[in-house]
Image (cartoon, rainbow, N blue to C red; front, side, top):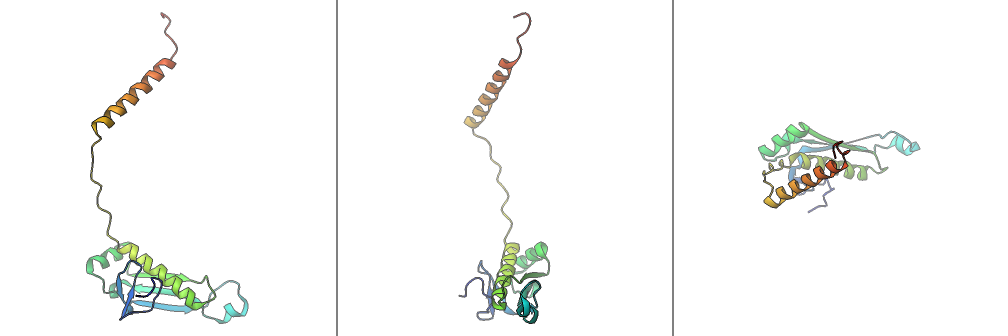
Length: 146
């Protein structure tokens, strides 16, 4: 199995960091010239990389595809131009796109089960309230008839 940051297909599939298998045909990358400083190298080399994943073509189960479509839309994209190396930018952008797809494909957390406070917790809360009330009552100015 390749490292999680690799876009290299294995048996026609790309593996996400969480182990989901995507059809390699659904993952596409494009190299362009990166902006910013760098002199001749940046002006002549296509080192910036954009990775796109077509969600409908991934081969994931319909339920997962629908979750991803609802979360991020029909295409997941990520770009990188941080490195002077196209290979490194491809790895960084690919990992970012695969992680974004994994996060969108994760099932929602289960609803929280309501619980009731224990008897001792209720008694402790009432005791604290009583003490706070007494403390505030003791701070008041005494009445004239005292």
